Image (cartoon, rainbow, N blue to C red):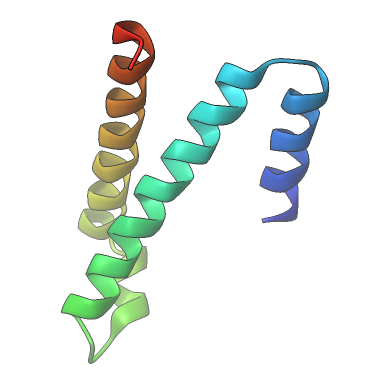
Length: 77
């Protein structure tokens, strides 16, 4: 978590705002996917997170967030 925060800070300091925004949006997507998995599999939530399908699900959520941000930036919304 500290490494991600330092990376976003460094990208902000070097005025690379777009990359920092992408990282932030991807983290929101992955966090949303993790929350969904943990709420769905209440008996063993962390096993669902570290399983291969669970990681794939979180990656899909992160990618969907990045795609949504890309489309927002491209269309100037």
